[in-house]
Amino acid sequence: MANNELNAVLTQKIMVSPTLAIMRFVPDGWELPEFKAGQYGVLGLPYSAPRIPTADPLPIKDPDKLIKRAYSVASSSVVKEYVEFYIALVESGELTPRLFALEVGDKVWLSHKFTGMFTLEEVPDRKNILFVATGTGLAPYMSMIRTNLECNSDRYFAVFHGARHSWDLGYRSELNGFKRLCRNFEYLPVIDHPEEESGRWAGETGFVTKLWKERRLKDSWGFEPTPENTRVFLCGNPMMIESMLEILKAEGFEEFNRREKTGQIHVEKYWA
Ligand SMILES: Cc1cc2nc3c(=O)[nH]c(=O)nc-3n(C[C@H](O)[C@H](O)[C@H](O)COP(=O)(O)OP(=O)(O)OC[C@H]3O[C@@H](n4cnc5c(N)ncnc54)[C@H](O)[C@@H]3O)c2cc1C
Image (cartoon, rainbow, N blue to C red; front, side, top):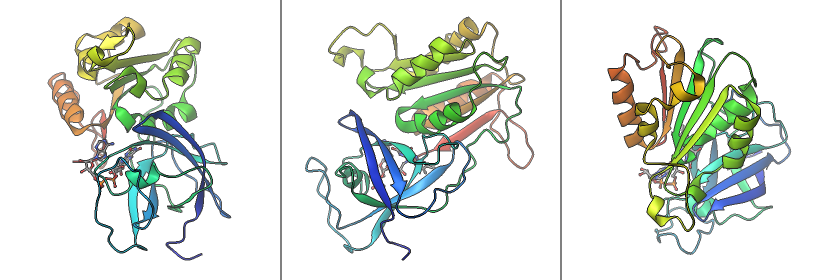
């Protein structure tokens, strides 16, 4: 198979909102690679692929050249039939307006290898885990939760998920389901534009940083998360990552150092 041949089929496209989609792809005649929950694959489409009509117009470069971008896998690493991604539309972007124009049955280029260090591999089993995300930064956590969550164990998990509106909170039902079923799992979604809601929003408002500052984990876990007992994962908007790093570092947490195996904060940046 030629390197740039479109080699995977879109089998499901769930529009969470007009600018957020959950997309499932099935390899066309090859097997999905082994991967660790939290890793990313690469999707590609040629410049000749159509863009959604509302996207900003951009000049078409070499029509056959593939535009390739990284996407964190959202499906569990034990699922072998398909791979799922949670993708935000960037109207001025090169690839996402083309991905959003795809229909079920259309083909994309999908990397044969999934890679990345943003995994639970270097986290000791006994550490509790806080996943902090904005937007599609939730994707790698969905894979980790779907793969690694053990309900009602002594290891505590929590997800802080920030979005603009309630309708931008992808995977909300699934995460609420885990919360209902697992006493060791907390899910706290938070929206920062409540004034734009069409109905009453009874949940949290503001930013994910507020949930940390208000010690919301102590309320739900029953103990304070500390550098000794908890690892914190950060993924999403670079500003959120910077703010959380500042707050956490002031409380004694440090960024994880892979070589020296020190630190408790694991970071994945989607863009600078
Ligand atoms: C390791 C890794 C994993 C990633 N996983 C995901 C994922 O699971 N889901 C996902 O939607 N994106 C993910 N991304 C971002 C993705 O690779 C693309 O950058 C993004 O889809 C934009 O591509 P584009 O070609 O449309 O825009 P480009 O033409 O590449 O324009 C990029 C610009 O768009 C902005 N941008 C990029 N991503 C976003 C975003 N999510 N929201 C708002 N603005 C953005 C930034 O300003 C960036 O400089 C990941 C990136 C990395 C490095």
